[in-house]
View 1 (cartoon, rainbow, N blue to C red):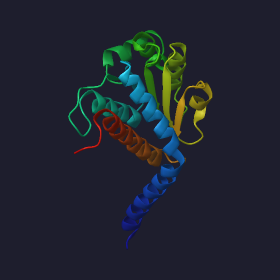
View 2: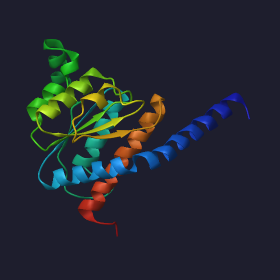
View 3: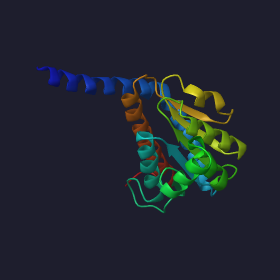
Length: 198
């Protein structure tokens, strides 16, 4: 086996290992998050999602899976990725501060009992932290996908928040688990809303 083969094999092994650890560590928090999402949707609430970089892509992927469909046909679910409107993002960053790009949207669009899904592998992103604070002010429920030690995000969440913290310090591995968690949440929502597939 050459060095490239070894590198590839190790990457797969590391990803498998952290997913196995996460399966044990995160089951309860994923169940809680799923129940909160289901309850909010049944009560006519909406879901706002935000993240930076790869986590922005995850936010958009999750929102699309709810608004359109994940695996099965069903009515669209109200979900908004706060990462997609370049005019809004650049206006807020220019007129106020980049740290406010999600918070101002949360304040404008969020209502009590809506849900904010905040995604950050480090937990240190100022604009995600500000979004959580805005959600707290709006009496929204926060579901945070984090990693490492949870960062500042873990410190600003209120007692009703749910943190899904991947037990890893490696950004790529954390993000891989975040994507799996989002897929699981989509599947659980489909199960709760539609029942088991035929």
